[in-house]
Figure (cartoon, rainbow, N blue to C red):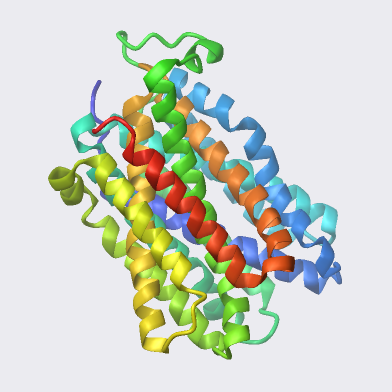
Length: 389
């Protein structure tokens, strides 16, 4: 299979813009809803609108990508994100309109992510997958840092930003996304001749050790994503309990994100020295230790170090689970199983916060993080029992 050109610069720029656009538009959509006097109790509908439809269509989108190449989802995703952003900027004067454009944004985001991840798989041999996904997730992390910063830069530092200005800037980002998609030379065809496409049912039919590997990798990815999301949601609450200012909490979250970026630069080297599963298992175990330690009273400097450790170890897991799913997937079904992984991630982001909220009502914020640490430790044990790749 020919290697797509224009990588890694074009793909990295594309990943930064996708994440920055998503992380500036989604919070701003909530602010726009507040401007429209939408009750705070209904803001969760926006999150559901973004996540639920992609949760339902992720696997068929992955199968389509296996059969027709990654060019179609990349272009369709960029187009839908541009339409959604423009709609939010200029045609969103009711909750129903906000929900509609959030659905469009979520579908566009799913398509672009499937296209990006499949682009990585066709441009690197299996031996280089860990390093390739590590490099790919580096700009992903950077874009997630840039996006929220644009809200302050474009909308001011008031309690409610100027949503028109922010969404206008987001439209510019969406145009940049289309341009960066044009810079990527991707496949318009499907899998190679020796990779029989088959049906979705056949692509999903895996048994024995392969099935165990795939679902272990997906479970690890789900728990990692849930842990990161819960830190973002519950660290402010933990800080309020401990008398830590909101600004300091922001710094702690930035430390976590920056540490994750740093660790992803060395994923390939770590795997080359220690192999994939031992590296993933150790990172999960250390993540569990860091997450379990966060609720313990400690000096601020020590908490910064703990957040850095959590960021370093949580950052390693995502590229390794991508590489593991890609390598374990049946021939001609890589995008399909990467989409199953994305489905698991979305399911975790939908279900885990709800369960955590119920736990917090009885065990408090510390109890939520300890339960999450136990889940990370449990997955670490399962991973260490996997095939030694």
